[in-house]
Every structure is written in C-alpha cells, then in structure tokens.
Length: 208
Image 1 (cartoon, rainbow, N blue to C red):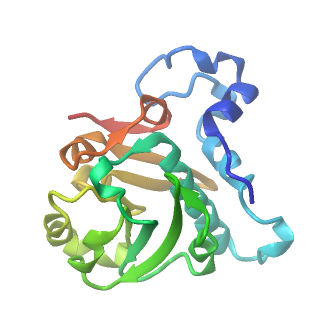
Image 2 (image 1 turned 180 degrees about the vertical axis):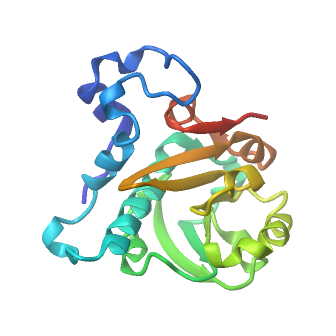
C-alpha cells in the first residue's frame, strides 16, 4: 500500500480546499464533509476481497489504522524524542485492531520504520511515539494520562469523550464514516505540534 498525501488528495477532490473553512472543524467542500477522510483512508487499504465482506468491525479498524499512520504526516514530535531507529505505535489494553495494525509494521513514519507493540502497563507505554488507548482502559484513563505526563506520546483513542478527557486525538464512528476530534491543548502540553491543516479537518478542536 502506498502512502497517501491527504492534503494533495483533498485539493484534487475539492477545488475550494485552499480557502479557510467557514467555521472551526468544517470542511470547505460540503460533499466531502464527514466522508472525506474515510474515503481517503480506504485508498490505503487492501482490496475489498482481502477483507471479510461481513466483518464491519475489521473494516472499521483497517480504516482507523490507516488514519493513525497518516496522522504522522501532519504532526511534529520534539527532536529529542526521535533519536531511535524505530517509530513505535503502541496499543494499551484490549487490541481491537488485530492484523489491521500489524500491517503497518515496517512502513515509514517520520523517517523511521514503524514497529507495533502492545502494552498492559502504561509505564512501559511511555516509550511509544503514538499510543492507542483501548476502550477497555476507559476507567483507568486518568491514571494512564498521569503516567504519560511530560512524555511526547501522541495519545489516540476511539471512545466517546476521550478527547475531552485529555486524549489528543479521538476517532469517532458516525454510521459508516470515521471522523476525529483533537485535543490540541493536551498535545501542546506534551510538546507535540499538530499542523493547522489537520486541525481544520477535525470535527472539534480543543485549543490550548
């Protein structure tokens, strides 16, 4: 699967993409609103024949895995955190991705090879560059975020309310469409810079 330049693809699909959105979180091309990133992420996935036709869950998490990889094109980590050869994408708690996330192993992010790791202990997860916090860890979320404090770990989840609770990116499913919310305040506190291009595509942005 080839890496996708989301901004270039968006501009090809919508001539108005160069103009500012009419409101925070609104896509400047109405026909693409909501479905835009979902459709682009699908371009990164295997052909439909490679996915079980009756497995909506598997398809959803293939899309979300593609989102996670593409987020790296619009996010900058502190230079000091990118000293190793590996770019670690971690999963904390019950893994909803299965093989979908493992397909990212060996791909390139920020000039480094992606390595997928799974964690049960948030202390061990401090080594990750991106950490997906599973819904199974919802009750432990305050403790997890405390353990990650002062570490440049991009936290991602897909539980309702996660972004408002301090997770940096919350991916949400609206029917068959995947969107996301961004807690830019939490990212800023961790020394992580999220591009304004990605902020404009978010359904909601919590600012510093």
